[in-house]
Length: 235
Image (tube, rainbow, N blue to C red; front, side, top):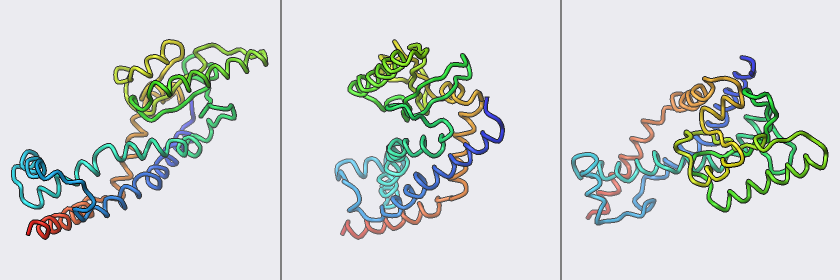
């Protein structure tokens, strides 16, 4: 199990990662949404969505109906996924792997065996092609271990999913899980760190970034500017 100093170090690095690689870009991209030209507006549903969500179709409600899905939707999850390798290289640097095709290596807190781990961001972030790629990398490690007379079991090659639960894992992950363990969310972080609370602590660390930045005023200012643009374009 990691020491309190190691835990603090990882959480501090995680906050720095989230602020520099995710939150600042999120803020800058939000500031650009002051014009209707930033959106593909469906004129048949735009007023309906504003009325549905906010009870009226004023320009401000129409602006919120455009902005909220963009800034609170899937875009930030996509950004997190694209920055995953940076997270592994910097935040999880103490677990870095030199084995080709493997992101991190760690001694499992449950069985004490060394694990060779591919990391993925969420429970629906791979497809069938990825399954064959991952299994191929695990097969290569098995062959290498056999050549070097190393002890390696099928369960020593694992997939770690940063968030989610076993129940949420896609069919692609379940295919891998037939031969190699797939650890999702809380389970992954506990296998990695030995700390049953690390998953919650990590989520809270990311949330603290938003508290420190407090972009609510900026978001309201962008909504106001977009509402004005909606008024200008309605004439």
